[in-house]
Every structure is written in C-alpha cells, then in structure tokens.
Length: 80
Image (cartoon, rainbow, N blue to C red; front, side, top):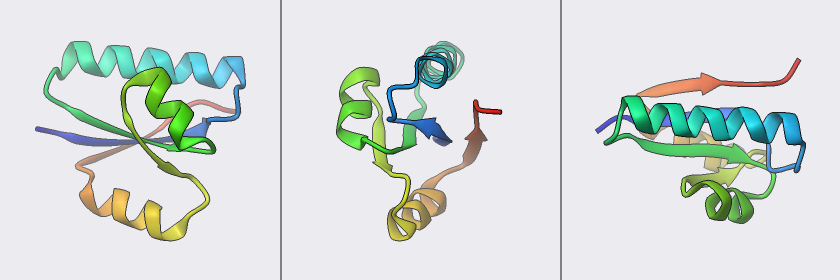
C-alpha cells in the first residue's frame, strides 16, 4: 500500500483548490486503489468528511513531520 501525502491550500473552502483536491483524490484512487491518502488541511475534520481521506492540520509542525515520515510520496498540488 502506498501512503500518499497531499499538500496545498486545502480546507479553506476555496472552490478552485477544493476542485483540484477532489480531482487528485479521485484520480489517485482510480489508478492506485489500495493507496492511503493524507491531506494537509486548514480544517482537517471537514476535509476528512468531504473526501474520505485522513487529514492533518497544515500549520502543525509536529503533525506535518509525522505525516511526512509515514508517506511514500508527497504531492504538492494546486495554487499559483
């Protein structure tokens, strides 16, 4: 199983960024069905509920460090 960490401007209810995240999650699940997805988010609870992923607080250095240590791949998506 691949543990994939996704970073970006997620959990702020920005429609563009949230659309990018939805597309990433859908595409990854289609291509790597047994992957575990974790998202760095401003609102981890809402991100978990909306996308069915694990989510951690994007401004918590400890949570980020733990997520990075567990991941096999880091995707930095979205934003300008």
